[in-house]
Image (cartoon, rainbow, N blue to C red):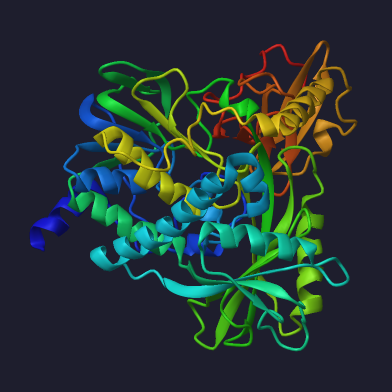
Length: 531
């Protein structure tokens, strides 16, 4: 045990007094109060069996699995460990997917639908196995899930889903209502036994220790800006350090090594969550979803500071990234919806948003990066990031280790789902339409009127610029066009970020990249700017 602790301390500096650094926006999720180890940046060249870029649930689960199999593993993250989208989840663990199984059956057939259910159920089991083996205290517990329709709407969707799920062989029941109090009668619903929930950052805290225990190396604040496939592969960082490895896993939520192909097959969405205090036990633990588009999702998390309270987590109001700037209204809509159904709600303790990537055919892309032999990707979480991420933590190590895996074809990134062609056309037409911003005028507001921590897009001659005033009233001026594929950015007041409406790249006010697919920062505006 002493040797294990020494190994962990040699790789990290534990700071138990502060929450994790937030790499992905201004808002804070309730999970972020949990400290994770801080790691030094990579300064020297390294060799490894596998280099993993991204230290969220995908990267750390892959690292853990591979390290346990004796592979030398290096994990790199451009910010703090788990400081990206993983820390913005609601931590549902479920095989009841955001997209209906009767649709999956149309897209992938009965066998594909069965494998989808099997893989997500296996992901929950794998998380539970890791928790037990590594003795991780992360509030994991099995709960039932409930799917219901809004009052007055047809229950046909539930009947169709029940029939489709029966074909998968998974256990499912019909129920007269979800187990809420009389203030919220959902009416008939589907009950999914043995789903689960946990505290994601407590889980990753334990997973980090397990990776180090098994010999993995982790580096934070290390920006990767170059990938080369080969035997070996080569990864380069912004500081010039190089990592050579037999395999590379790009676990960055959306692949930053892939310029176009994958990004035409999925779309970035923002999703919103509130956490409100409620009396302990006043809402039964469970996972709850309704069926509108956008839908609402609900779960309970124990309050870490007051044993007499729970947190009620309610989310929804999804929209395409960069294509709706009424951010405060999203939280207001969720709160209004929740208070009508849960009158025991007290104050709102947390409000946060996250980013999810919706593939055109509903399932994640997990496997070889198209065209590469030894570079692998995991993306397209479709609102089920915890299970999709853990599926990647099983499937990608199997591919690297040369093991057969029955899910390989289902999640193959280069797949062509012809029955989803209309969705492919719709999403890419939407992205093309956003290019109209090249021709529109800038905002009328003047720079002098900017409040601290606020940004605007202005036109300066033939170009557009992104202008941000920081908290010290310093002005930062960058190109308003995303370095990925040239989308014109829009200011996200809720997260204090520049968001690209084409493929979801995001940058902080000063222009530093936070989320891919962009790999680099915004281009600074010329010094000749008259602002």
